[in-house]
Amino acid sequence: MPKNALKLLLLLVLIYLWDVLFWHQVPGLNLLLFVLALVGAIIAVRLTAFRSWSVVSFGVMSLIVASMVVVHNSALSIIVLFLMLFSFIGYSLVPEIRSIWFAGLTALLNYMKMPFKAYTYLSQKVLGEKRATAFIRVTRLAIIPVLVTLVFYFIYKGANPRFDTLTADFFGSFNEFLTHLFEGLFTARGFFILFGIVLIAGALYRSNPIEALRMESKHKDVLTDARTMEPDNKREENLANEYRTGIILLIMVNAILLIVNIIDIDWIWSGFEVPVDFSLKSFVHEGTWLLILSIVLSMFILFYLFRSGQNFFKPNGWLNKLAYLWVAQNLVLGFSVFMRNYHYISFHGLAYKRIGVIVFLLLVLIGLASMFIKIRQKRTLFYLVRVNSWAAAGLFCIMTVVNWDTFIVNYNLDHSNPAEIDVDNYLRLSSKVLPIIYADLEKVERQMSKHMENKVRWIDHTDPVEFREQLDHRKERFLEMYKESEWPSWNLADQRTYNALLAMDLVPKELMKK
Image 1 (cartoon, rainbow, N blue to C red):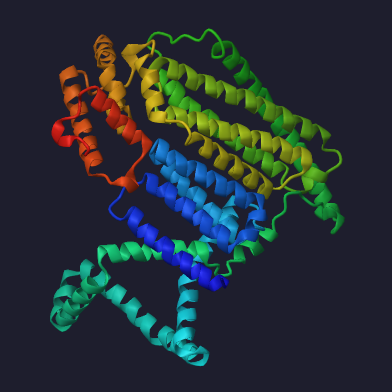
Image 2 (image 1 turned 45 degrees about the vertical axis):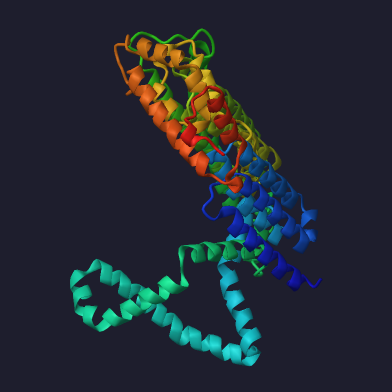
């Protein structure tokens, strides 16, 4: 089959699947089926692209995350899936791309150029090449200005009542005509299908988005010594002065950080206890982010010092050693930040923000390791961004494998410090946790009663009866949604939740799924 005919056939099939799987549905099995079909279609039209490790990697990660949407049905997995798919489409369009950022830019440019290319192609097919050229020229000269003018007219009409009144009589009939026209041509489902056409066509058709590749080709992983091409005594003098400044700076910041690390190792790493009237919240929240900021700032300073010529300055041995020492000390500081968060979790339990701190900290520590490689192997900023973007993509893919809601609830219900658990958070999590909470309502009530003994009370739900009412309301909303859901929206997490509630005799007959 000719490639153009194959693309058109795949486009029609995928549009049909888009409408069947997603119209009036929520994410679930439909996402996995659609991703499988889309990846298969891209393989069919661009098989040679899969010689690239980047294309294969993001294709596999997209399928893994799509599977996790079916298994866990978390907001995180859905968001990560769209990021993975967007990068996968970009890499498949131009497999030579190395960086995730430029892959995303490639996909974006392809989607931006595709409507204009489609318009030109259809005009040529209908009118012929010569007439199409004239038609497109007329369109640009006449229709586009009119459309832009109409956009501004409706903006001013909505913003200025007097302008609206002034033009009401003149444009009244025209407004009525446009309203009827749009109501007849563009229904909600029409826009939904149109969006699907754009989404699918942008993945299948390549609108020559090579600008990103051209931009990326200017960036290399390894630095080159510009001094060999343009020897300059003034430049050497500037490098020598920068070297002395860098030595002084790194000696001072290493000395300060050494004191901080010694204090943290002695105070936080072992035998840490929360003093009386000590604000653990400030200690962790403000302190943690300030320390993470200091690590990120350290990386920027090191990159500035080793951005170009200083990497090739022969007498810079001590500067390198002090930089390695600062990286090592920042790694120690990173572990101290982790210990702060660990103590906070040990005292107050788990929450998404505390997990987020750990994830962000892992990315920062990976950034420090890549900074060490950058200095040692004379790498560029492009290398740092590329490597750390891949690390982030892999980490987010792994995160979708875990059912974080149930993990958080199970951990907090069995926490050794029941007086400091955020009971309110149980009601903010997804419906997946409902059976767990119902099964352990006694533990929740115990945490409420223990919290009432505190001097400072910061949770809203302290009445077990009111909490149960809120929980029942959450359950009823879930059951109503589940009863109305169809097979494209099916996911294992909701199925397990429904089965568990059914086994606990918590599903009213009128809300049972047939």
